[in-house]
Length: 124
Image 1 (cartoon, one colour):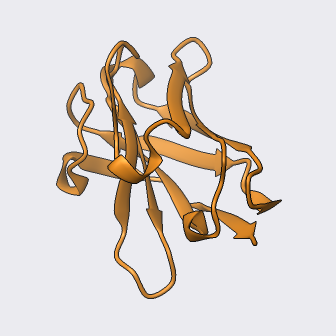
Image 2: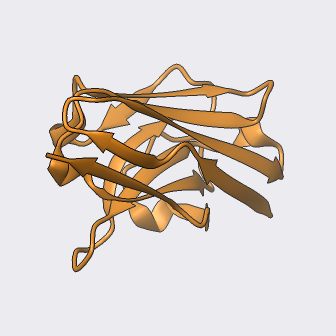
Image 3: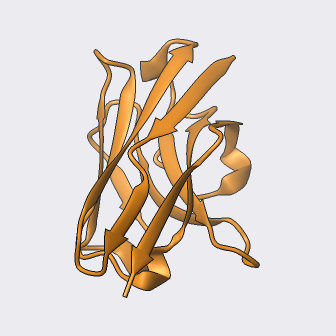
């Protein structure tokens, strides 16, 4: 089992930045690829970014490339999502997830464990 707790969400103006954190506990953290997904009201959950268990490989959705950066610190059992140049359309609940494989993977069905989510709201 893996328990995941996100933090760092909030309200920010367009063009601003936030850094989300996801603290993991339970299973050996460096066994899992990790990912971030988001879900806006009335929309399906969508892939944002993923990172391999070593942190060497990453993958991003096209709409965040160049603006968001995923990273991880295995010594701290934590994965991060740095979000720059935020837009109102980035408003959503952001979820951290742990894959059962080494990652990175963008497929939601590869993720067995999910956090409760953190709200990000970007005002125009």
